[in-house]
Image 1 (cartoon, rainbow, N blue to C red):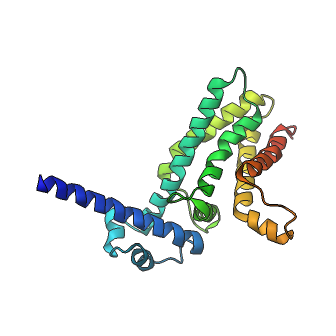
Image 2 (cartoon, one colour):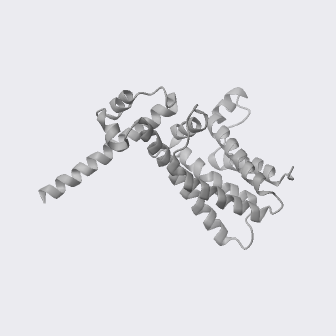
Image 3 (tube, one colour):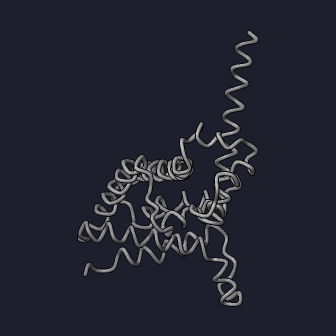
Length: 222
């Protein structure tokens, strides 16, 4: 019995140490980028020894991949769950606004959450993934991302059958850019405009983005 309790305690301690490393990495990479943060800084912040990175993740690159996957996987799963639920309730093809809501809402939810690996640091980290020189998404994320892109492209094609597949894919890509720019820099907009942009709650912000992007999807194919 003592051995079982001891083993369980060891596993719990290991999980806690791994989580502290992920949370320390989130804050540091989001603020300073992947290249400038040292493992010594991370392990000191997390309160673990330097060897812990190798033990849990294999390398700094393994830590980065694990962190990105920890952020991406729940978003990808949530997008598919929302789209599935909406399509089950629909009597015909979903309005483009509903498809965009299923695509965007998980990002909004995570960016506004105070749970671990969420909030403003999550947004900054996602920004790093798209702008950091030389960074590439983890290979392990690609199958799920391919499936997600195909699933949403099919949904858009049913709603807008005259839009060529290539343009569907690009317009989804543009939508990602609009979403990232808005969430990463909405405070900058408030400052630059002297407050004329107003303070929007989550629902209003999402409505503004969907209104803009749905008009882009409905634009005639060039």
